[in-house]
Length: 119
Image (cartoon, rainbow, N blue to C red):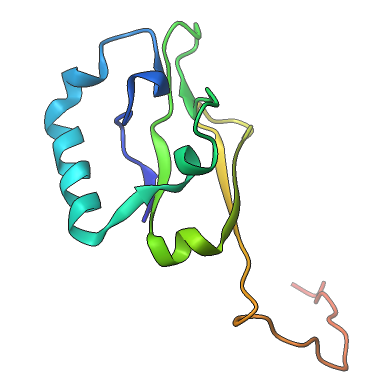
């Protein structure tokens, strides 16, 4: 499950503005979902000490990591990286989550792919 949750999960995921505890109701709902489905924040798991933000106001006085993926333990074991990247024309950053699995690997076919430029 991923997206803009409009709430930082930890104080280190926020710079400026109100404390994380000010969004306690939202945080409790996210925590409830995480506990119910045994989800965890994969970016924080793979980057435990890194400080990065996914949203910022125009003055940069307030910055937060509001966007994240919550995934299961099984998927967490398959995750090899989770990165926050700059995204153009938005106040949010992009998040890229990369998985690997020998079980899901597919052999390449004998042909080639060609982009249809007629449309």
